[in-house]
Length: 191
Image 1 (tube, rainbow, N blue to C red):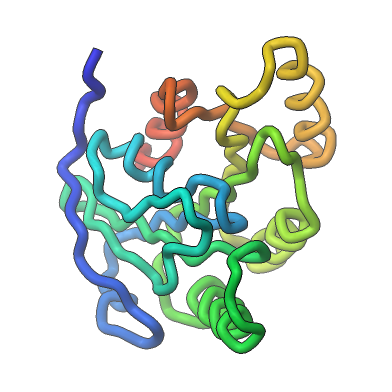
Image 2 (image 1 turned 180 degrees about the vertical axis):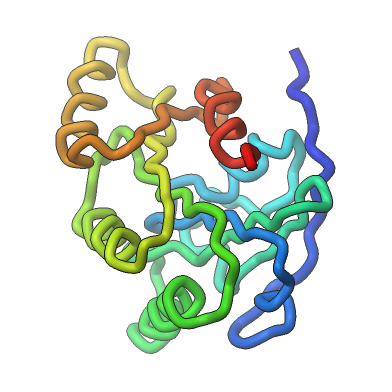
């Protein structure tokens, strides 16, 4: 069954200060380590190939802005912690992400912290939870790639993730089967 499409289009990629930050439409920010499936998740939400996805980690190197339903932006951040880049490039990404999340004038609607359901919670994910919490940015944790878990391991692995996330809202998601798509869209699109 084909998935419903949202009205969504690529607007621009930025590498620092830009007028799009001051556009007062809310921003839904997607963050997580490289190879966690951020771009594929965005594509599954909007129902079409919008964000650049690749089997090679680290494809997203700027802040990619997509206008959705003419009323909010999806923002795809570079991945952290895994991309095969120079130390200088990784430090640039870290500073760019920190600036965007914590020092720019962005109108945050919600951040979507994506973790790999098979890998589980990493130190980078824990640090992101702490930083988002301390900055009072609303966020939801998405356990992505749940279709990669063997059925016998699924319950146990998701329980480990829930325990690590200490009661934070968790959406179980698959960009492949679209499990969790409706739930995540409801969270994102509600006023």
